[in-house]
Every structure is written in C-alpha cells, then in structure tokens.
Image (cartoon, rainbow, N blue to C red):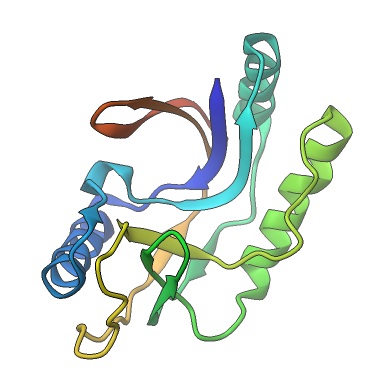
Length: 170
C-alpha cells in the first residue's frame, strides 16, 4: 500500500486552491490536480505492508497535534517533474516542528528516513508544459489545521486517487 501523512484543507480553502489550480493550468498547461486530491504532505511513506498500515492507522487515531495555521503566500515549481505548487516564502516553524515530530515517531517504526529538506507546499499541476509563474494570481491564504490524515494513494490509468485510512484525534 502506497501511503503518506498529510494535512487536508477545509472545504472553503479546497475551493480556493482549486481556483488557483485553474489559473495555473490556463497559464502553464499540464495535468491539474483534482480538488479532492489537494493536500500538504508531511511524510511520504511509500510502499507499506498492510500489517504496518494497520499499526500506523491506530497510531494516527491516537495522535493529537498542536493546532496551527499555515499561510501559503507564493508560487513555486519543481523543474524536473514539471510541478507547479503554492507554498510560503518564509519557513514555517510550527509546520517544521510538526513534520519533525511525525518523523521522530515514524523512524523507530522502521519507516523513513526523514527527507533531508521539508518544503511545505500544495501541488496544483503535474507535468506543466511551461513553468511560467509570472502573471499568476496573488496567493494569500490561511490554512488552519488540527488533524493529520493517513492517506492511501491508489494509482490507475487516470492517475492517483486518495483514500483516508485514519484521522488524528482532536
């Protein structure tokens, strides 16, 4: 099972992210991420055995995180895979601490290692034909978060679809 841990946006923010994805798609081409797939990845776990996934789901359900607020305010891209994303211009210390806390628990479970660098972002486009970030709308969002989700990524001929396996406690 291909798994990751993520923050999922509230519905009104998901709608705004979808509008930004539409604007980016019109300017840059590529494959627009469906609104229901928009998220911020805290930990990509890759292929995980079903028994380990069950263990992770129980851990996530018992996990309580410090609520926070992320403020994405800029566009970015990853050249090689042609990804257009939104994120923050400045490091977000609360998100970095949360991501570190998650990996501090995952590594002893035999998952990892943690990535060398964490760039909080939401992927809006994949395989963009152009990485033209100029003239895209201004980004100034507020993303309140208080829960983490364990997500199963299922890939087929239409791309990936995501299914939540567990949600952390409030």
